[in-house]
Image (cartoon, rainbow, N blue to C red; front, top):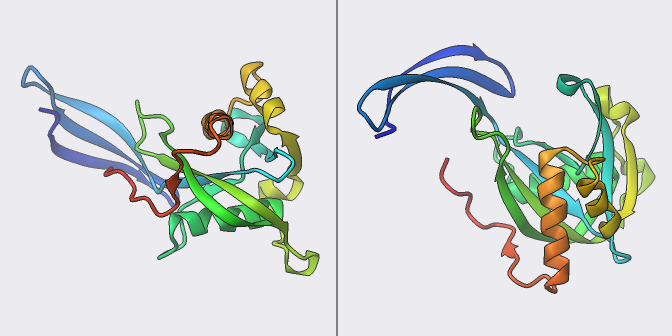
Length: 196
């Protein structure tokens, strides 16, 4: 049941490809299912000593508007570990490094049509990157706005609809829960990824 018996590639790009899989169903019939195969992504809830989180406001063309998000990006550097990728994104988008990184939450962003999984980390013990070592932002990142927001205020932004980016919603709610439980139960940053 749910065995892929055939697959046709419809599109192939740098970040994702689109395939139509032929999948056996519980009754034995075969049905076509269009799937976006994604390279995967990482995100990071960066929490400072004052209990504030880093939010970035970035233009997202598919939805035609700016969104409040976490520092995040693609898993697109060959051989780079997921925690290292998250720290790279934190450095590139927020000019910060972290002395401690834990796994916060794994999420499939749109499992009805895509296999994209994002792993969100919790970064603490933050330090600013010296100005002369900072990443030069281009394209949509060139006008990115970076804000430090109290975690409870960020959660309120989720609940009142100002934050609608899925990984930000999940990451911020998970970070608030982790904080409220004294960060008990956080998984190590190098926890293996569930099979895809």
